[in-house]
Length: 340
Image (cartoon, rainbow, N blue to C red; front, side, top):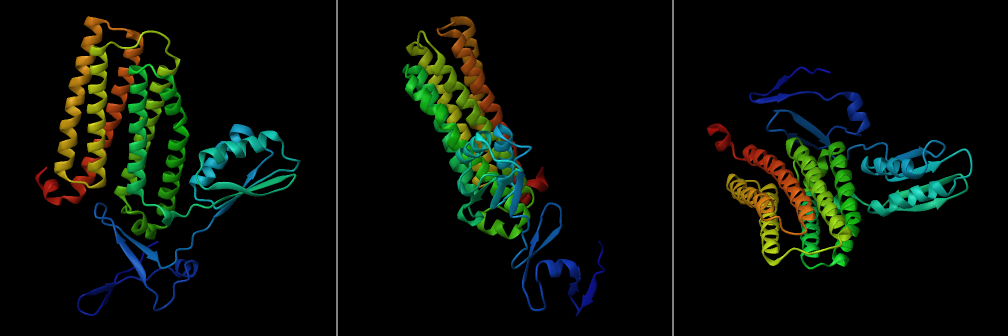
């Protein structure tokens, strides 16, 4: 679709909008629209006062989906922003359908059944996109993943399997925040006006946030894995010297990941350099710990090796976040871009 640019007055250029777009969004003469600019790509996005958002309802075929498959289908529809989802079949729904709905309800914030009959179940999502802002939600996710990691290490050092079990159970909370975050991202993609509400510009920042939340979710998974190792461990606990090293590594990793979250939420060259220095200390800690395990062979050796490998994996995920934070900072600080 192409439009010819017209001259209006001595310094004003104008372009007409497609008639079908105007009809779809009920745009008429005198209405205001918002023009959003992508500083990277140079494109403009026209956003009507009340964007027409379709497909707020969906139907899932209960003849095809049940149990885990139904659970995954409901999660997908939730992320896509559906407000009302009907699970409907040609025969009476069975226990496997109700189990799938219940499993999805446990993972999705604001989702609950509102009506059901023999051959159908209706579930509704009560979450509104403007109830949250993405920076706050991202920070909450990051802090939750960090507390899981801290608790898992404490459980090993203090020989407390109850702490490990609590850490494992917190994964469900992370899942709820993760799927809510993705729902808000998709809602903003469909309706760019929401970017003013959720606190993130459209374009690259929105893409960056999508990648960031994947990394934080992966960190929570890693913390969950450490918690499982601690829960299942039966044997000696680390000695004092080993525990001190483990706590130092965990503390430096927490500091580095906290620094990169700060660099994401308030992008600047200084913030990314602070995070980069923090990760350098983590790299030194990990190298030193591997050398310690190789030469001193402390107990429980296999458990410690597995945990350090998981912590190293979290550090790599944090460095990936730092790359995104650096790009966000460079986007804002044009003087740095010009000197790069």
